Image (cartoon, rainbow, N blue to C red; front, side, top):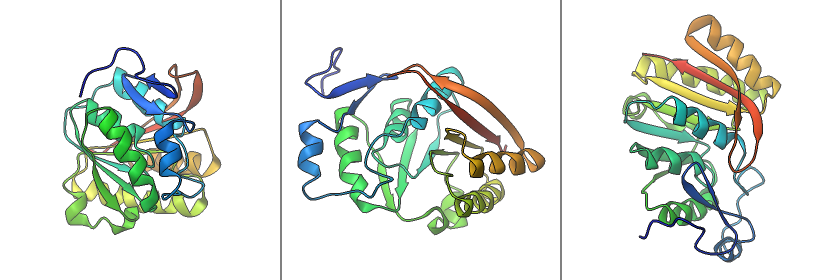
Length: 207
């Protein structure tokens, strides 16, 4: 696939060296006819760009990445562009057609896994080095799921967990819990592409 310098057509934009589709793009409109994601998977969420910006400044060693709640795949695609082997996990099978189109646009391959984070058993979890998640801790139940999952990840040998959020209460409560047990960095961060966006990052260093 050619490496574009300018957007190849309308309703495609560039952020952190990857190409993403706007909702008005013709491919998105075509996909919407047979693949309708639920309300949490109907667009690219801004917290994804916080992770991209962080990784741009703090590049981890290339490894295996599990992107939880991958949606249309912006974080997964960015990590794949950096040379990581990436699996995108999501509960909604209807997000994967959008991920595939965007992955192809960026000439990367993303492995798809349909299910919840709790569906990843300890053996599978041990295969990953980095866990990422953007806008994925917005309920108290998710706070509790993430807490259990991060504890399992630590035992399984995962090296790092990178989560981004606008600053919702469940996410901030998860940060407090992680700070008490793990080597945890917490940042007020901002992304500059494709627009300015402020939010928060939690980096849990498990190894």
